[in-house]
Image (cartoon, rainbow, N blue to C red; front, side, top):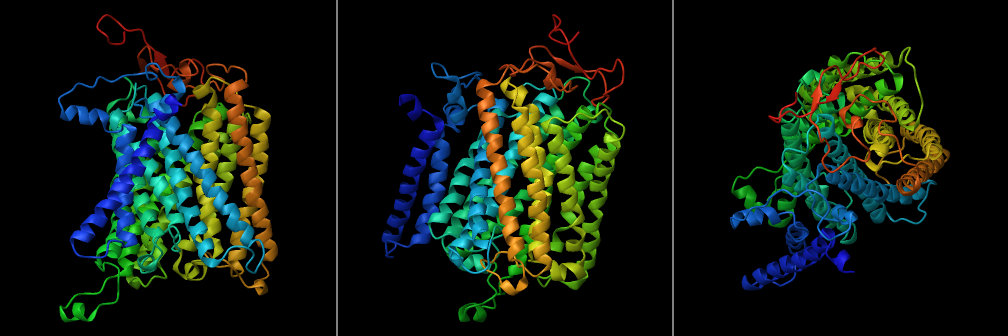
Length: 629
């Protein structure tokens, strides 16, 4: 029991409870001193939530070293498990190893994936047949809204997990550039996720994951915790982006020029540029709604009081929120999918046993997607009343983003062509990712064209397109990465039979779900509604989508069972079972505390598979000067 109470997460949660109570009490005292009624739920809960979130970070020990610095104390970097405690405890507390932080990100992301998926299963049961079955409209709206944002949070955490664990290993670095900042980047997600989930039990919210005002300005109080939770999660993205950009640009192994970097590192560099430069916009837009509700600042309120009219105030602009929101949230789509596309490009040459076709073009296409992604936000607003003069430029820029994406598809096909293909579970998920992302890509242009988007907007066609893009661009590649690097992380093999069962259940299930969603959208099913007219003739389609969703959920449970049992009881894996050229596969499995006991020197090209005598990474002995000989 003493060991459990000493865990960072336990101390943090206790501190969050205390901090929440103190924050709420502080507001009550201030209100009493100001001669106002002691209780007003929203400001009290919001301030309590903020103070509690900071309390969790302090209680967990995130700021401990920084507090010591303010007192002039030295804080040498310590590696390995905490003294006198089991090794597993480091995963439940603040640890500065990028490998531990990568596992923390990944496991937390999977837990949120399960939460979001469970919410979806509940409201999919409601939608399986027309008429109200067991969910009222308010509960449905909350479940649907929470499903969307919790799933997005889980993807962001999955991206953080892959980036933190893999990028330093792939570039031959000992750790991230700023280990303490790296720990803060993970831990700030914990109160963020808890606040979003807490929003469900303090009234919920009915805005969907986008939080559009003026609806969000009038929504139940849960929307405030949703906004604050997303704010914290967005802060994590910014901190992680700074760290990863510096790590990539300054800590590469000798000989690793930019065009000798693994393609996944290129994908994460492009992703980090988006995160660093765009995430502030969603934080700003959400914070403005929070302040509008708390202090009456009508940023997005189109109505004016008589006093405001006399003063000559201008009305708020709800469309302004959409500009701010989508200027981040469409580039954010590439935050989700660029790492996944990088995984596809990383794994295909390994299982095709031939060089990656057009390496430099793929690297540059990731940067091009990151750049053009900032020029396409307006296609989400074709029906929102934006100026007609903006519609056509936004339509063309949106279509243009398909060009660098097409470069990747042509490269993948050329890499597969005449390769010596093998089909273990990671390769199967890579191929599934390509097929699903293709569905998402082909269903995108109708949303980008003004004339067709007018009819498709806010129908289930968009739901199907978005799910195909997210699953093909991230979820399937993420599962491929989990299976691929599982032997490296744990030192154990996974059960190949269960892995392939996961694939054969999930892939056809998702094809049915996504294509079914698009089909019922074309027949008139609107999104974000709890009921639909049986005259649409979509009851059968809705039932099939629900069944497909449960098949997907069951397949994910199979994966979790496989990974948990394999980590404990499967046979020991070889150091390099996939015969990869990447540096992390040239060291023992599981990776030791000091990843590279000898310096890594890059002497060749990263993807010259099948070329006799070609070497990419060499472990060099250390000379007397400490430099590689």
